[in-house]
Length: 452
Ligand SMILES: *[C@@H]1O[C@H](CO)[C@@H](O)[C@H](O)[C@H]1NC(C)=O
Ligand SMILES: *[C@@H]1O[C@H](CO)[C@@H](O)[C@H](O)[C@H]1NC(C)=O
Ligand SMILES: *[C@@H]1O[C@H](CO)[C@@H](O)[C@H](O)[C@H]1NC(C)=O
Ligand SMILES: *[C@@H]1O[C@H](CO)[C@@H](O)[C@H](O)[C@H]1NC(C)=O
Ligand SMILES: *[C@@H]1O[C@H](CO)[C@@H](O)[C@H](O)[C@H]1NC(C)=O
Image (cartoon, rainbow, N blue to C red; front, side, top):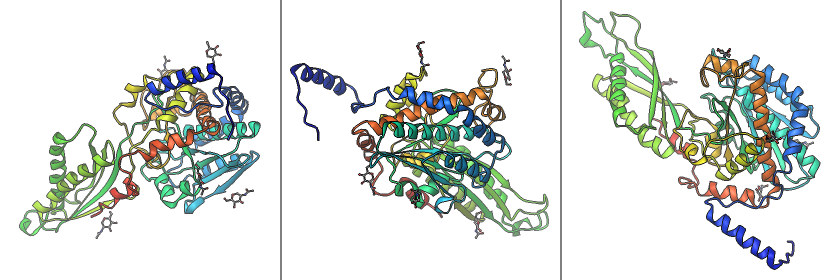
């Protein structure tokens, strides 16, 4: 502990600073590094841009589905290994396409981590731009390590390869296997392409359900009274859900597809199947919304006499919690790079769009997932957002890659802020500890026990 002697002027200055801090809703720890590291981060990233472009391009041009990202896994782990000081572990914790790459600083200190995604969409390639997510994470991690090295900083930076974000819950699987806890991460950083720049990722909590109704086959004209119509059960359930929508909150969503209704027009269908996805603002809203939907599914079975087999898929996603202190640091860093971000208060109150498995991590570790606009070759925005063909094209352009590098600079800035700012980790963790439904049980785990 350093002994401090205050002059009267210093005491007065501190008192004024104290008033300013107190009038702010956020307590900002005093930053040791300020923006002085950004120049080095920026120059370093510019210097490796030519090395990074082929990685981004190869990922984009070779889309692979969740848990089958073998090429991406090989590409990224070899790339990290080719950089000095990185300890790369492949296929970690039983997940073949997951990995970690660890860079150690000069001793104990904060452990800053980046998540790379690299899975694509069926039939749509990299229409969610996960190649750019990987690029931001790899770049941010390398730049953070570079500053750690040049400044002799204590702590660690870890790059996690997190597969299967699209519906299959790669990060939830890794979280439950203990990956992030075992590495004792202080923060978890990730960024996502979109149609505009924002520090906030606002997503819903979600679960996915598979349904099967079992009826009894019969001749549709000769002996319909002997049959139990599985298709009718499903149609009834579908209509009950359509009526329930009127009584839902704006943030309660349900959508799905009927995958089988029957085979022959003159046979009472004995099997009908469907899959539905349920979403709500957060886990506390999702639980009662799910209960009401289950009643609709049961209603179909009750009215027709068909038997219901309902399966809740594993790895439900929790809503994203944006750590305000890290958001704060991202604003400083991104605006320091002449980036523009929307008004913070309005932006933080956006309606949720989609869901992400980073949400589950964000309930357990301080996290942010800023979004950034990507562009067509001619500088225009893609005419469709994530999960559309135009977005896939934009995810592969040089302009979008350059944008990803800019975001990576700001993300490295956040990581370096955490590494160099006394008390910042503790302050960020206060937010985690103050989250409402944390009673030692992960909210997502509670939700998945709703199986029937
Ligand atoms: C790399 O990480 C592995 C797994 O954590 C560890 O067993 C090994 O000792 C590390 N190697 C070095 C050189 O630090
Ligand atoms: C994990 O990190 C915290 C600081 O963030 C530290 O206090 C604690 O000792 C670490 N735990 C382990 C097991 O290394
Ligand atoms: C219920 O549905 C699940 C998922 O489709 C399936 O794996 C399981 O075999 C079904 N159970 C029965 C009893 O048919
Ligand atoms: C930001 O804009 C100012 C004023 O135009 C310029 O001096 C500065 O170099 C820019 N900074 C970056 C990182 O582009
Ligand atoms: C820019 O490129 C997109 C995608 O190729 C195209 O749809 C759009 O018309 C172009 N805009 C202009 C102004 O040329």
